Length: 81
Image (cartoon, rainbow, N blue to C red; front, side, top):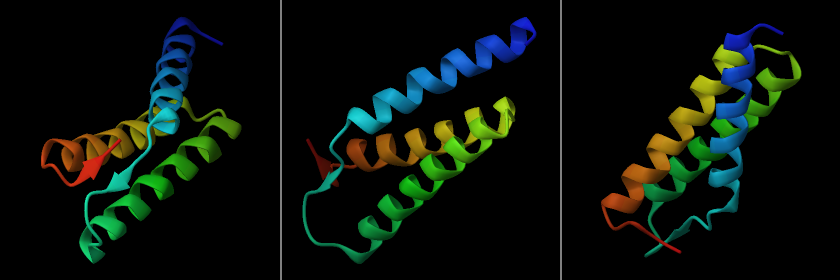
């Protein structure tokens, strides 16, 4: 594994652990928020798939997309911990 792959793997695991430790609970029952949380879970699943395939670039992209959706929902006040 080259240094870039090692760095991508480390960063991906870091963000995946942070994301999985969060409790993503909607503030109110909203179809739109539920759909976005499903997207977060789909990206997390994709990330794990790409990690298994040793496709570290796509794994990193997937976890960052998931993180971005979750963080946006939090900043909009649509999630609580």
